[in-house]
Image (tube, rainbow, N blue to C red; front, side):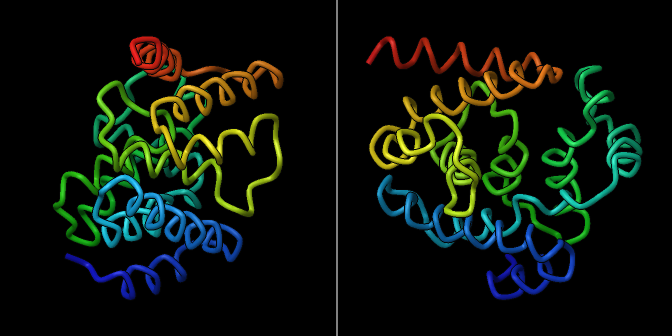
Length: 192
């Protein structure tokens, strides 16, 4: 398994300075949340560092890798190729860095759109990506930060609602998986 110090060097050379700082912030916050929720904090830190491994690829590169590897699940991804950075990132982590840990790969894969069967680590990375300290303020950000420290399912629901609202307000295309995952968490929270 790759060491965090090696991952930091690799990601620092691969991402813009702003994106690298974001990844460090996500890693630190993910490690903190992991301790609170009984997850391996070293693994959470590592995933946080690696989660945007493919973020600085161009739209054409993401589409080409997505096409060549059967990663395009929905036509929305062709219209918004940035959504492919998560599954492409997981693929490249496996191919380029030899990472085989399915928990790490799935947390990277699910950090943008989520999935219906998210592990605790998946939720931590998804939320840490949204709430890291340098994120710009948006409605419900402070509430999301608070919920992320005490109830991951409620935080996921609020985070997904915020994502959907953001897309609707900007007339951006909405991936159907986001709606499906949101509805899954709504059902989970309603049963609490």
